Image 1 (tube, helix red, strand yellow):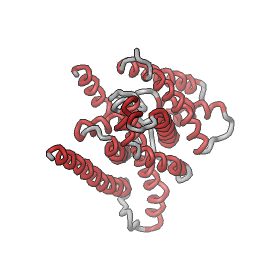
Image 2 (cartoon, helix red, strand yellow; image 1 turned 180 degrees about the vertical axis):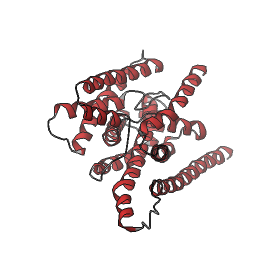
Image 3 (spheres, helix red, strand yellow; image 1 turned 135 degrees about the vertical axis):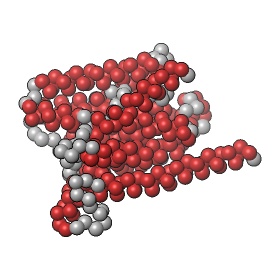
Image 4 (cartoon, rainbow, N blue to C red; image 1 turned 90 degrees about the vertical axis):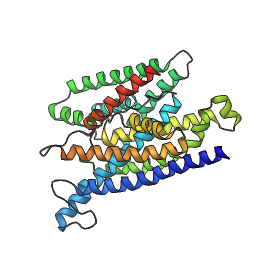
Length: 330
């Protein structure tokens, strides 16, 4: 009886967090839409100029930050279970670097300007390739968590080196645009680019519904099969969904690090490891973090926007160092 009460209390705690976080997310999105050089009431813009500013700049920007943050945080939560590594994250493991590398190669070797959908497929292919490499290494018995992390870092360095070569052979304008994009930014996102949401949102919803399967897979492959989970099919489905989400996020906002690392890890420390609740809550809190980071990037400087990746890295790097030190102590 006591165990049932404890389980019920834990489930209620998760649900309260999800409800409160959802309300906070709505409030932060409304605040982010309103704040700027011109204060705009989201539901009552004053005049045609404010309405145009709202519809063409602020709403697309907040939507992009929300969806990208949710996609990266939930992807990080899934990778941490798939790879058995609490430090796994698309940026740290080089998956985002693979996606950005594919996009840069597309821009340099395809003479036409790619559409958002073509860019998404290129980024997804790069993310999928790097994910498969990491999963292949993680399935080998001899690869430790630390070595797997080093492999991911090496893949990220390799992709960065190739992208640097691309910078060297590009003109000044293209180089500035690529550099700003690779540092992560949702500034200037158009409604055409937001067509990627038709791919991201359904995949994100399906991914967040895989929590029960992940909970069973944490028991081990043999136990999961005995409980009726098709481990191979679920693992490949998760790999494809994570690759698509990371690819879409990179195509939409560039490389943004540490969101997928910090959010799910801190939630696990605070609430536990039930993935059926952790995945949707990670998506919500990832959206909150990136909308806040984007708002800071807009208001910290009066004459320019900071790349959002700079803000998330400044916040996430100290947490990552703390997590590394903590894992060594454990």
